[in-house]
Structures are given as C-alpha cells and as structure tokens.
Image 1 (cartoon, one colour):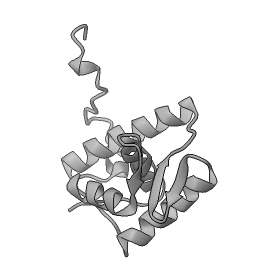
Image 2 (cartoon, rainbow, N blue to C red):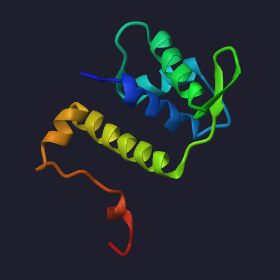
Image 3 (cartoon, rainbow, N blue to C red):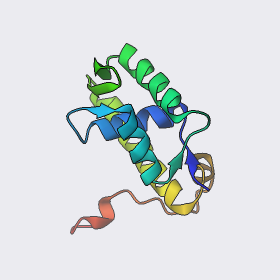
Length: 120
C-alpha cells in the first residue's frame, strides 16, 4: 500500500522535489511521487495544485507559468524541518508504514544519514 501524500507531507515533498531542479511542473511532482511509492486521494493534479497555491502564498514557491513553479524563499529553520520530514517519509514508504506509525514506534531505527559518514 502506498503512503498517501496530503497536507504538510505533500507540501514538503513538493518543495523537496523543486529544490532538485530549476523549475517543476504539476505533472512532474505527480510522476516523482508515484515513482517513489506515494499516492494521492482524489485527483492528484488538484491536490498538488492546492498545495502549490498554499506555498506560493507563503513565498516558498514562485509561479512561473500555468502549472510551472520554482523554489522561492525558505528560511533555514524551515529547510531543516522539511528535510527531516522528507527523510521520515522516505523511511516510512520504504517500510510500508504511515508517518504516524513510524513516529509512534520508538523501537524502529530511523537512519539519520550519519551512518554513511566515515567518522561514524
């Protein structure tokens, strides 16, 4: 079962994808989400469009043209929170869990990324 993207998770996923490129379209967000094992409830294009409208109002995304956006201004603390949520989403989808399941099971090992460092 795919993890459903909505609300904050969807908005943070969009920002994460937008940071990888110069600009991003609604179709690219949907394709990237489905390739990574996520799903949407209802019409994916509407969910992504609504999330982008929310982020545009807060200047975290900038609209270039119809259906095309680029990253806007994101404060460093927000970037940290977004990165943490994206890391948790990736772990959750990899384990077939919801984000709430993952957070409520303290026995699960959640990689921090430091395991790959030579000093670790």
